Image (cartoon, rainbow, N blue to C red; front, side):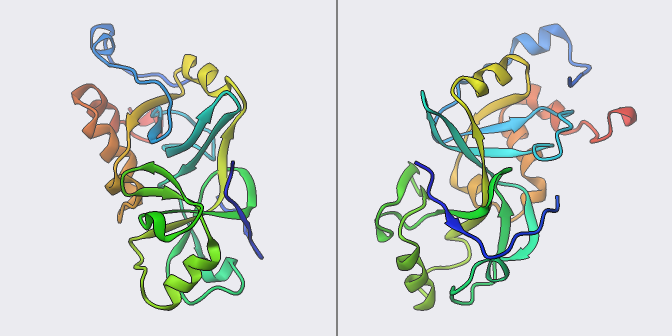
Amino acid sequence: MVFGYPLNCWNNHFSWSTSLSANSMKKIIHLDPGVGRILVSEPFLLDSYFKRAVILLGEHSEEGTVGFILNKPTDLNLNDALEDFPPFEVPLYFGGPVQTDTIHFLHTLGDKLEGSKKILPEIYWGGSLEMLKLLIDTNQVTKNDVRFFAGYSGWEPNQLEEEMKGRTWLISNCKKDFAFSEHPEDLWGQVLRTMGSQYAILANFPEDPSLN
């Protein structure tokens, strides 16, 4: 199930190769996709949506996969995009190219929001929007407790596994500091550096391959 709410406005903004040795690559341990894990795009993935993206997976099953890009804030404020919502000065993030006219949210509120789905300890997805509005309006929620996304990233059954064969994505485990990072512009490199020395090398690759 995808928890989504309609937006009243939305503006569209928005074969890798490395010099790593074969011996270095052999040391890399691969994880499987799953709820609570993050996809990290390979350094030279040039797709405009997923370039240097870090994506938290909220759903992964035989029916497909759903995730949210954690490191692509837009220049829109939440209140610019969502009607009838209490003042809440937070950016709206680009969650992915699927249904960009809907809004989704991750949060740390747990059972305070009826209907929310636990992804990891301290990371939940969706729930009652009306209850969230009430908690915000009564100052029971801080800006660090919730993150809002326009759209989501989605894969059909087995599509993500096929992309993994093409070495499009690396996989790591998520934690709260990643999901609610205060410096999303640094998140891609930060995650790679926590994955070990082999991955830390990738974090230093220039965005323009011709500069390597």
